[in-house]
Image (cartoon, rainbow, N blue to C red; front, side, top):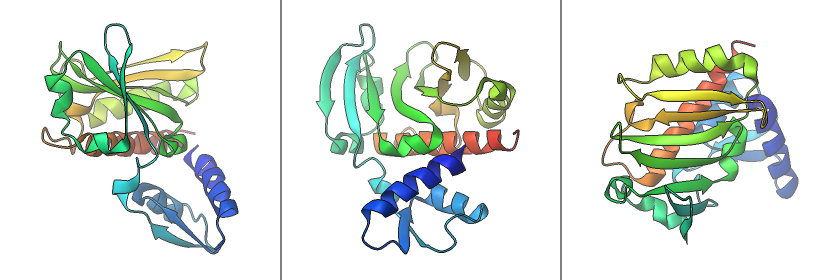
Amino acid sequence: MIEKRLVKQTEEALHLMKEADKIELFKEEKEYAKKHGLFQDIEVLEKDSSTRFADAYIERCEKETEALILVEAPIFLDQSIEHLKKNRHEFIFVESTSFGVIGVDAISLEFDDVFETYTALLGLKIQKKFGPAIKDYFETNLTGDAGKYSVMFSMADGLWDVNFALSYADGFKEDMTLAEAFQLIYQFLFTLVEACETFE
């Protein structure tokens, strides 16, 4: 899954570059490529992780109605994640080309009033057969007792509707920025998709 998407994305990037003998990848993708013997004839450089969401499209929206509050520039993600705790009526919707590698179009993040957790919501493009692997990953990698996650396969969309408590993920900190939170979500999902590959 990751290999196919990563190779496609990298080939597109190489096509646009003048120097086709080197490519830049973020840490997760670089380690994955090395582990799987990808791009052996190309020098793989590591991209600065702080630039992952430089191309992000960001919306702040009302939770109840999903009405748009404001479209924000990527610099908005430099704010503390506590923005969501202070503004419980809203959620943040982020689209980024980075998400394509893990089979996600967009991710929403909100503060869950019931469980008092920061919760990520997304659609994950993975086949239905990986349901047990997905659930096992969440059970193993999220702490906490209640409201850890919910996953449901949508036959209409052919993807998994996923909600999970980011607050229960290893590496979560209450004082992190929104950019750091989305980076943690990305890493968490990257590892999930990689874990599903071992079930193939």
